Image (tube, rainbow, N blue to C red; front, side, top):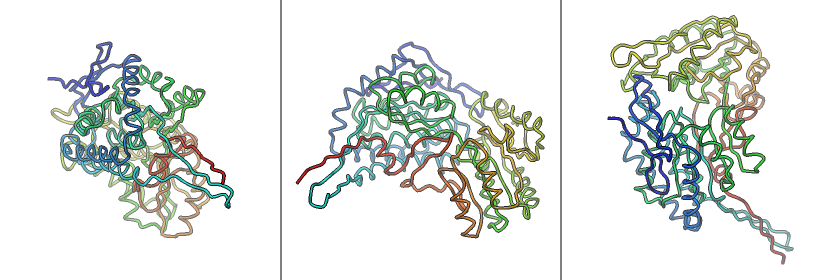
Length: 481
């Protein structure tokens, strides 16, 4: 029987008011396994009404009690670890091993981090040389919207919800309609943890149906969004004239700069991971690989060999490294870029095709990890976010050329730099236009640090106190002596 996912509004599990439903597909098999509400404006209004009723209680609750509830939610995630990991793998197509190693542990860590951080969140004071004293107060905004994507469903869902709740806000949250299952389970966990009804409301459905109300309603004070740049632009056009707070984490076309003096084996192994982890469906993946010319041919050939060795298959198998991409629509988009790249003069060195597996997985959405060479910097393949297991490679000579190549797109989310020369590392880190620079590593995260991009990759920063500041309104009080 199909699993029936519900909206979670005011502490109740509800069908959409329209009684319409969406099919939820297991991409590894191309099989419908659940239904989710096809929500619309009326459902969002119900959620806003529920949040309004809960807002005063949650804002006035002692910070320590809010913290305790968030810790209980984290414990609930950990207690249902196996169930959540299996659901994430089935919903998204990613290897089960990845969900167990990254997605679910990080979801619990997000809740724990902000449960603790809110206890350390200090106000500031400023003495005016005996003439007076200023001190700041930070108040919850009220009701906020959190919209998360399908690539790291529970990981990014909790990354937004946790600081919003910790700061004392009620939340209207929308997971991707493509991957709703773990958000549904999180609703159950929050319910069991004693989160007051209406503090968190989870709405399922299409963005174009629920998004306008979630972003324009006068009761919504802030919007935190992670997703495509195109959708981010739509949200900004709606919310900015209404003077709502905005945090937008959008696309990336991230460079991986490999200098000739790098730790070769580590750079090679990590480049494989940063290129194809989660089938390349991570906004931080290094999709443009630039290799200094003295090691270019060797690195290219070794990269091809290691890419060919990656196991594509059943996401639940322990040896699978490449699972299914998230949907048939997304698979077709990725496949279209192979024709585009060839027409632009590129050479596909490995991959570049759909993979058909045997048995129950024969209809799944699998793509071979792909390396493309010989493209100009201005071509579509190098400029547009493909968001799949696809990378381009090219040589460079000087460090100045590496910077120019890295900065040649409209995006600026992250970059990876591989060198054993601290001066080169500092030069590249200072001159590459990106919000996050990794030196001799990739995807290593300290949750206290600011996260976000520049240019078309985003507005604002998430993480640590930056997130708590975003979800609060600051007030200055000046007392004259």
